[in-house]
Image (cartoon, rainbow, N blue to C red; front, side, top):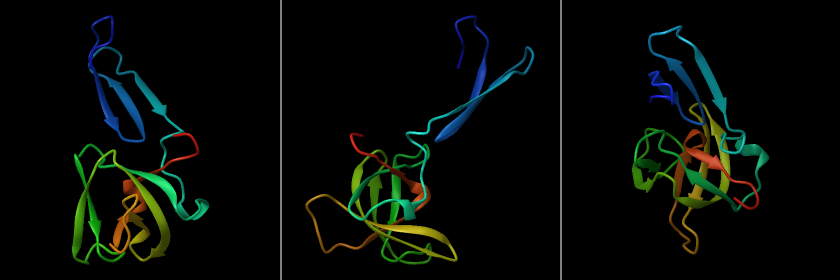
Length: 122
């Protein structure tokens, strides 16, 4: 990206990001958004809302069981809002069972790092 003075900056990151000036003095700017930062799943009530985060990818893989070795149960669209039903932790991290609003019976699990936990009014 270029700033208004024409300096070129390289942007990297997801929930927070860093801008690094290309050439010039090599300045760095770090930006963090508390609103969109993934929060620990244990601090959120069941049936709260979550948004899928593909970390720059258009889709998020959803699994049949809470582990990366299980069958793929579907692909969610990055930015899509789902209901978080429950969360659990295992050796592969924290996983949350999610569902599409108004649908039941389908078991979908996503790693908590692929979710943005939404607060009231978001």
